[in-house]
Image 1 (cartoon, one colour):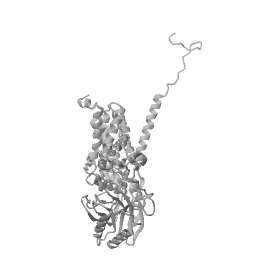
Image 2: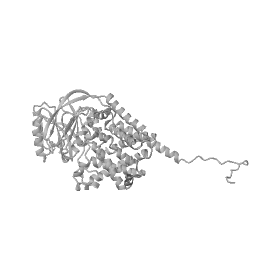
Image 3: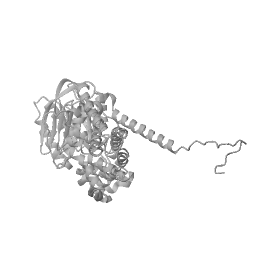
Image 4: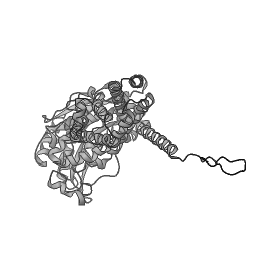
Length: 519
């Protein structure tokens, strides 16, 4: 054992290294956006796990690395959740404990070519299984899915149109496993090189042959970003002023950010009339977002509400997937104490029951989402299936202005656009606001967190259906099948080893009596 190996013999030192190694992939996401780092960032973590003396220690290394990744990915929540973020990081990080044991099972020692080939399928599949579990809304949703780090890489966006962000994640992990083998297992390089070649071939095939969206006309959409303004009345007045500046610019739709209206419009007809007057003045319907206690049913809702020149159109979408702790506290009777150590929701908001496609005139149909719903690939896919021509996300990250969160959130819209083959508008209260075309490429410039403005975008529309919209989350299903087949094979081998040996009848003498050994 070398000196570094002796140093790692301490469990605390080893766990610290695992935490740091697990956090390394975070740098591939915005704001650093070192997208290329994603393809090598897992190598130190894999190499560390591979060297674990026991399967139990490998599981701890997986857990510690998962903790580092989760805390690093969500570090900007620290002001809101306080120490609770470390509790969440430990709970979600435990999802990587079985993955750590898997890494050691396949790569410890000097693995055969067969084990390495199996690792190149099973380890990425295990990673996708983790991403699937933590994508459940109650666990915080799919924020920080590894494939999302490639939001500005054109070949990766083409892969997203084939298999969603899941396919990108799978291939990134496969590349990292292959590179880890190349670095640490000198005698078994053929399967690793074959994996790298196969990944390049898959990417090239997707680039060449996957269907591309067909451009079919365009529309002019304006986003209104008032900036950080205290108080719903002052914010509304600023939004009103910025919207009035859009008169005469021939826009088809105006989008305000999340929580842009702090009062229920059914209970405040004066506000709905003022928005209707803006609609008449600009010649465009206005999609606002109401964050208030409703007058027609109990509870607080976040709702996308469409207002035309004649007032409320009747089109309304109530947010379905709420942010844990930010908009509701799971198991409030047990975890309600979180309100005393952070900025957790004092009262649970209510959620809607179905997605809505809205007709805003000019032959344009839109599919609204609210806040971190843009992180869920299935929501945008269903809106595209239901006929939405433009995806809309209304967001607000005003609590996290000086963090990486605004840019991370804006980048997700590029993935959703590429997956569905539909342009996407990400409109926020305080930045970053952004627009992407049907291939996930940026349209115009981002509106940064320092801006208080309205901006018009010429958004190209598209037709056609991507493979992801048609076939859904098939990479996840394929990964679960790989894991199931591997588990079945493992159980079968263990059963055969534990089966009793067949009984051999004793030899008999000439007098038909059993032979007595040793006599």
